[in-house]
Structures are given as structure tokens and as C-alpha cells.
Length: 300
Image 1 (cartoon, rainbow, N blue to C red):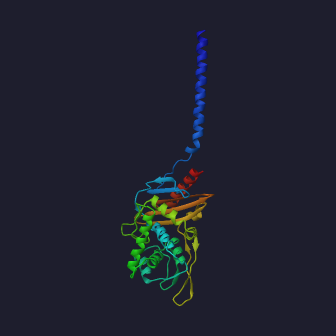
Image 2 (cartoon, rainbow, N blue to C red; image 1 turned 60 degrees about the vertical axis):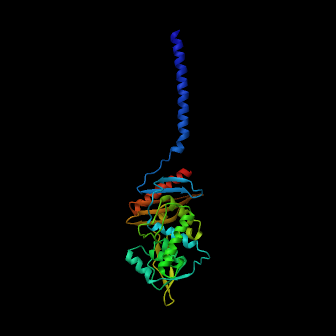
Image 3 (cartoon, rainbow, N blue to C red; image 1 turned 120 degrees about the horizontal axis):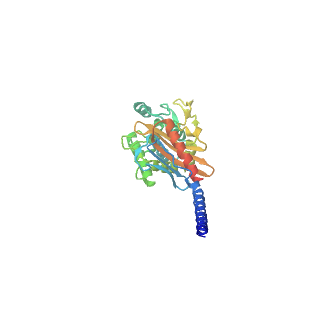
């Protein structure tokens, strides 16, 4: 008899255990999709990505750490130019010797603009964003800053860049150059740069430029003839390697290392983000690819 009671209790206990187990297993399966995507490991010192539609965070790694930005600074340069009232993109700017001397002196990336040529503002923006021309950046700062001397105009333009950062409520960003060749006080963060890029992407002109893989400018020479410039190729390799890539800008330098502000669209979803201080050109693209894949997986 005792044996029968024990057996009955054992059966009941086993049934309860099995039922509980089933609940646990079902619970684990239900939770699995949310846990299936784990945050990637990146080499870059800092990284950030967000859903461009609503600004919600998708990935962070030292997202609010101030770092040197290199030529990703030029996103703000372009944003300030495109925000000018009554902007005429077809207005012509004469290339000065000072712009050419500047890139030679700093061994800087350039659009190889030719002194005396007349180049449109639109062409300068392509020269700024595709080959990352510091000569184009100088020409734009000189054109859109205000003052009676070139130095005053450049200072004024950099002031506009900092005002734009303040208007976006960015507390970890400061510019002391128009192109990223700073004097030690040019910095931002992965989160701030992503917000700058997201704001810049509201301009259809900016969006068109940063997704362009190559561009050939036709400029007007001193004598009035047409010069076909050597083709500018976009330094952002993601445009050719990542499905749906739409921008935005590379950066590099001794202090900045290798940076990339990136964006891609799949269906109705756009992920935008930044990696700062990665270890190489290939690695920054790998880091960005990992973050983009993770971002889209999270958005579903």
C-alpha cells in the first residue's frame, strides 16, 4: 500500500516537474528572438548608431568620449554651407593660391583644384565630400565666412560650425578648423557626429553628394575655356561593399586614426552611425559593417 502511495506521489511530482520544464522551455523559446542578436565587438575606440527615423540608440561604445574627428569634420562644413540663406549652388568661386599652398604645406587630402579656375559651390561640395579635399574646404570657408580678410572669413566660418553644433545641443563637440586639420581643439564624439550627419542628411543636396561614388567636374579656366577635372572618387568604400549604403564621410589622421560616419537604408529603415579611431581603412569599414548589420537586425 505504502508503495502505491509513494508511486502515486512520484508520478504527480514527475508530472509537475515536466509541466514546469515545459513552461521554462517555452519561456526560453519565446525570449530567444530578442536575445539572438548580440552586440558586435569593434576595434574602433568609439562607436555609435541610431535609428535615423526617431533617434533611438542601436549601438554604443564610448559613444560620448571626445575624440579627434579628422575629415569627418567636413560633414559640418557642408552642413553650414547648405544652410546659408539664398544659397546659389551654381555661384562660381575663383580658386586662390592660398588654398593650394595650404594643402601642400599640410600634406592634406585634396581635390587638386587649379589656381585661377572658377568652380561652382556645388562642385566644391563634391570636391569636399568625395576625395575629402581640404582645398575645397578652404575655398568654401573663405566664400561663406564674413570679414575683410581671408583669416577673418575662415574664423567666422568656423564660428558658424560651432554655432550649428550648439543649435543641435551638442555639448561634446568643438571645431577649430574647417576640414579637421585642427590645432588640438577639434573634437566630437560618435553620438554627436551621428547627430550632425543625421541633420545634414535632411538636405537633398547633401544626400545626393554623399551617396555618389564618383564625380567629374568641368571648371572654367582663367582664359574662359572648360577644364575637365580628373574624376573624384568617394573615399567611402561602403558605397560599393554594403547593400543599401547611402553615405556619409571618411576621416583619418595621426591623432584621429581611421574614422567613418556611415548610413544605410533597407526598406523603410535607415541606420546611421559613426566609428572613431579604428585601426585601418579596412577595419573602419568592417567595424561599420558589423554595426549596420546589428542595427538592422535589431530593427527587424
